[in-house]
Image (cartoon, rainbow, N blue to C red; front, top):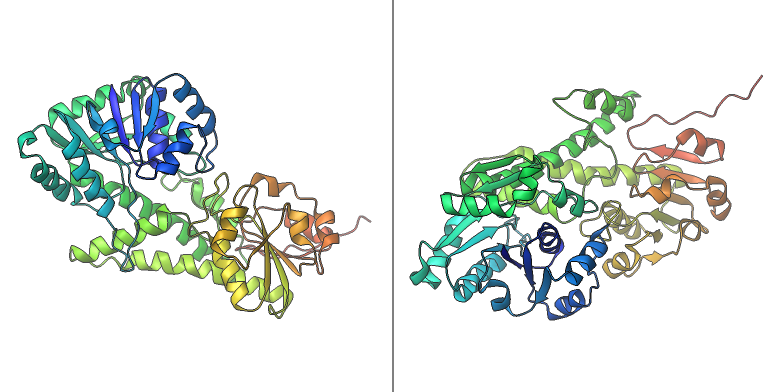
Length: 443
């Protein structure tokens, strides 16, 4: 099939590559000419494991191309995906200007019957406005431009894996022909046993926000439990293990730490709350999820104060700057939120991240960025583990400690062996866990 994808960001580019990988001919469009030129030269605009090799293969094989001419992505296509950004306004409302612009452009360039697909995360009811826009721009194609919702459920750091091995495919709409087009589009996945869920379009739109808000809820619930564990002497790792063993709950998203970040969960949580208010339903749980998420940063700050006493004038090293491992995305990163809080109290902050150092420094110019964890620890009064990178699990604690002004370690992701840290002479604080005690010497 001939497929057009509008928007070459995280969602759009993964959509391009995955659909090309199952045999479709895909044209990716972006308004940013420099991004298009980079992709034509097979240069990735962001870090995502496996995506570079897949991009190279599909471009070389002739299944994937990129353009800054929207007609090249729309004219003659069977399906066109809207994968543009929906950033949050100050009010929390999703900014849908790019979605409206994409709908107008698709209508103008359409050359015949076409299935238009919302893949951007949009509030429930957006489809009504998109359909009106398509009809207003091309009254001659009313009934031929058919709209569907096909939300993505991609995790940064595992986006290509999620796209190529989806847990479910959700399609919302009302046109039997459009549903059949999507079944043909996703046939290789469906033949492999991936469940296809078909709903009305509004339910599909709402499902994406509902899913992300629930994942955020699990994280905040766990962090609230971590505060309770700290107060009672319980261990959040043990509590989460017990909870996760219940198949009704499951182990995913039950890790205590600095909270969630990235572009999707904070944005979608705020947009979901705003949509609920607009529809006349108070949903205070959503605001509480956000509050607890911010509280997790303050909990980490309290642990830093506990081990260094006065933060002002101290050097603090943050290990991990991206919002999660395996990505260079620092948008709404808890590590950067902690960095800002430390700087505001007069600390000198240095950070290390395997791939996100430059992006972090662009966000916070006062942040020094080191080439490795040990350089970051040089002269530091405290090291804080902020992102659960695999590279940080195998830290040489003795080498780390010899570079520091004082051996203080705050494990913001419960990543390290606290007993080993104590044995290496560190004052060690974790999230929601009792302070480990030194091992007794052998008799």
